[in-house]
Length: 68
Image (cartoon, rainbow, N blue to C red; front, side):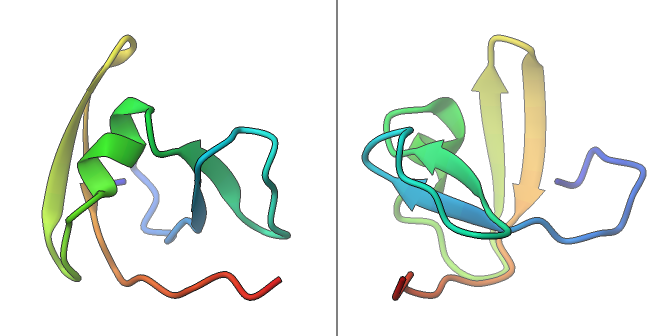
C-alpha cells in the first residue's frame, strides 16, 4: 500500500473464493475492489482502489504462482 506510513511490503493471495488461504498472505478475492484492480496489472504498476472504506493506492511489486 502506498498510503500506509510503513514501507513494509505485503503479500496477497489473489483467489476466487475467500476461503482459500496461504501461509503469510492475506486473501483477496478476484471480485473484490482490490482483486479487480490487480487483474491485468503489471509489475511496478500503481493501482488505485475505490473501496467502501475510501480510495487506496498500491504498487505491484511482483506476481508469482501459489504452488501450495
